[in-house]
Image (cartoon, rainbow, N blue to C red; front, side):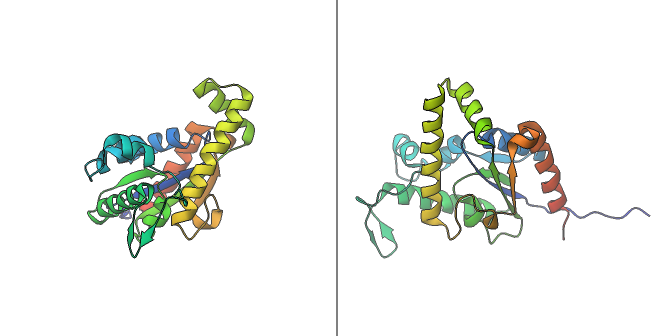
Length: 205
């Protein structure tokens, strides 16, 4: 008699990534394989743009670290555009999850914002420095020094953003269900491996 396999009705995949690791590309492949929506910079900004700010402000402040020199908070209210955009983003993701939607979210502290959802699995994608450097040089048409500075700048911004809002540290394996180096298998095979891992998680009771 064939055993009945129960699959979770909802799946949420929260992906953090180092710049140049192929995290966005891998997230796209996972979302397509699972048949769920990907919330990345473009789609997240489209979701929160009707929250009272212009598209330009949302784009500039999305996943940006807080400027401590201009930021002030009184109780739960802040005058910081970065904080307000971040909090509205977190609320949007929590609302989507509460409604039962399945999705992949890239960055935006997803592994912490959605940690209380039992159907959420979190992944951090990193990579060998030379692998990341080569990808950024090719993708952005930069020389070596420019690519090094690009990676340092973006990762510094992501780290500061994440660590301001989260209890766990950006990239610390203890804060994620899985961390993986995308250069070991390459982006395509890494996405395939992670998809298999996620599908196994979906079958867990």
